Amino acid sequence: MKKLLLNNGAGFNLDLGLLLIRVMLGVLMAFYGYEKLIHFNEMAASDFWAKNISFLGMTGAVPLALTVFAEFFCSLLLIAGLLSRFSLIVLAFCMAYIFLVVFPMSILSKGENGQEFNSAFTYFIIYVGLLFTGVGKYSLDAKLFNK
Image (cartoon, rainbow, N blue to C red; front, top):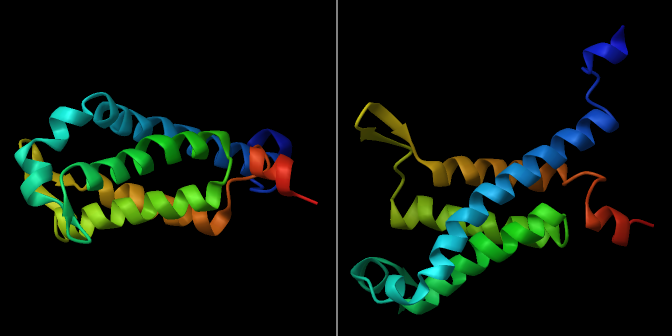
């Protein structure tokens, strides 16, 4: 009966859950990055990236390129489970920067249908959680780097 409940949280269940979280999170964030990638030139020239976003004194194309690297390429690495700790650190840093600097400390904001939760904060919490748990045995990291 215990096998049917799938509630022991060890082995297969844990690794399958981490795989599902990792893949869904990676796919969702990769869509954000892909949109920025295919519209890179027009976004880099926009007032938002030229005037509102500054990373280490750089504006325009440089912070946008770093964001594309994090959101698109690191998300693809996360989906595959390759260099996952590096990818999670980069993604968590990107989301923390968005949460703390771009939209300063706005966890909740007034939306059309009531309160809206800041998605960058949500992604940040999940990335940090995955940093603590690891990405599971269904990853390229586990296949390539486990002894």
